[in-house]
Image (cartoon, rainbow, N blue to C red):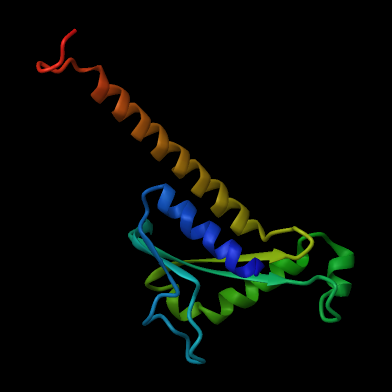
Length: 146
């Protein structure tokens, strides 16, 4: 449930920034048949489309408890590294972003940076749209009485 909600959040945020995207893109599957969660349909950075994959991990699982006890966010960082390693074949053609979130809220650092950038792009797009509407509405139309 959390995975779906986070994936939907990323896709909708991209759409609100006028960046077309698709979820679960076909043709980008790994050798085990698993696909990333999403793909932008236009370049994101350095002429490459963005591919993202969301994972939600539990820091209370036996395999993570020791790491989680030592440092906050360490479990999310470990999960992001694992995801990145699984998608190394895509990094030549795509900008890959792992989004790893611990169930108790920490998120990996690169995902934080990505979400901040996405929020900034969304706001910039909305400001541009607002300004274009204001500019458009500032012209007096000949067919309207003053």
